[in-house]
Length: 414
Image (cartoon, rainbow, N blue to C red; front, top):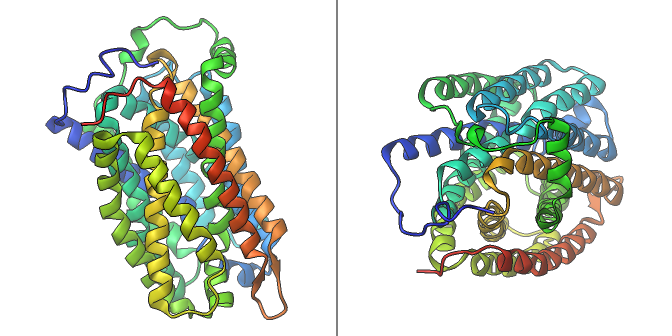
């Protein structure tokens, strides 16, 4: 568990360096999330370009997750034995290499291999970022920190996805990956120059063997509930997002050229929602905000998966509210779960959590590929089935999050 100092609710203002650190971590997350997300909206182009089926495309999406899950477990034993800044740089530049392979892929097997390499490195980055954020900030401030870092997802929609779709329409689907490299390398340089070493955990007592460190973290009874939650939380996104563009084009009847507008407006709204949700989590209680987000999500998912032919404005409105609900779940959940592991095991805990999350997400994407059936006219059948499954899982996470909420000595809402 967090130490009493970490739980101190008195300090509420960020120092100048902390603001810089949050900005660097957020920008880093932007490049990583963009690389992961960009493959999904390109589905409507990649599938006919490489002559592959929805099942094969689902495997291309999930291969990143599966390889990320493997690397997370392999890295967990060593995650608390190094300066977290150096660990972050190592995996980030490996991630850039994988992105370059994606940019150069010309066949389905090469794309599959490139996504595996990217996942091997990229899957660990998020866990290191969370460990750094947890080391630097007390629980009373983490809602706002997670809110800002999570806006990387929104920024990737506002700036990345529309630009990626534009570059794809202008050249081909390889262009967005070259663009990610162009902005990703400077992000790594920013970390090297401006971020201080994160070594506070190195002075704490640890197991002599990395394998023992890994095993003790996996088998710690207090972590089981959190591990289960991080597996269930991403299933909705992994199930619905890979086929989102194909669904909007072939089922809803929208033109591919309007998709950037949808992602742009949704992302802009989320940029504002993320920090507000983070602040609300610190002010009103993280579990309360999580419940609110779950209610919004449970309302919007069946509407989205049964939308039919509606105007563009309706699609945008539904997307905006749906993503507001999703972020109102993710941000407080991350903040609460971050308080579970003690300082000496944060790196391992986050690496294992990321691995379990990626495995669960990969399985979800693969299952979605099996459920979805492409009709002769290109439309997708059984998309609504995925929505009902996502709703059932979301209900289960509310019950589990209540138990986590009872474990965490969160300061009383102000």
